[in-house]
Amino acid sequence: TTINYILSNSDKYLNIFGTTITGVPITGGGSGSTANSETAKRVIEIASENVGAVNGNKFISWYNTTNNTSYSSGTAWCAIFVMYCMRNAGVNEQSVPEFVGCITGVNAFKKLGRFYYKGSYEPKPGDIVFFEWDGQSGDVDHTGIVEYVDSNNTLHTIEGNSNNECARRTYSNYKTNA
Image (cartoon, rainbow, N blue to C red):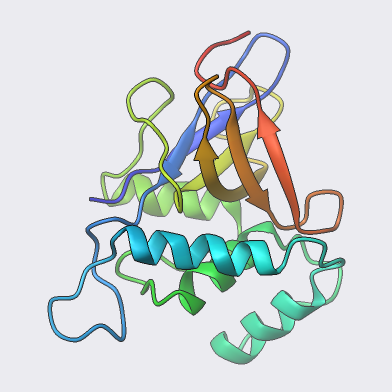
């Protein structure tokens, strides 16, 4: 089952939505292959290898070539980065639907019945997390990949287009409004 999250980080508002890839079909693994912790590790490895990359041109170019699109330099590229990591780890479109815009991603996962708010699911490495910064319900602003959750309930992510670079980020007490 794929699970999805939204994380909102306004003063008094915090929501979470994401996607786990464990147990969903993947490409290149033979008939009946499903994602597992090794797939999640590969997603995180690919994301980690790109920490420090700036301006997103590498990912936008890959997306344009792979999908016969023509997004330009300067396109918001957080979702394109997530797609880059997922596809290069062998996670197919049936498992993680193609999305370039965050709202499109949220709607796709809702349609598949894989949308959960904070507190109803514990994020796992390799999950996709969506961020809603201003507390406007449904106004999703950003996305990234869960690296891990530590024992202090701090969510650790790797995100593309975080201040126009790939970066590791942390979110303390992501389960509460604190």
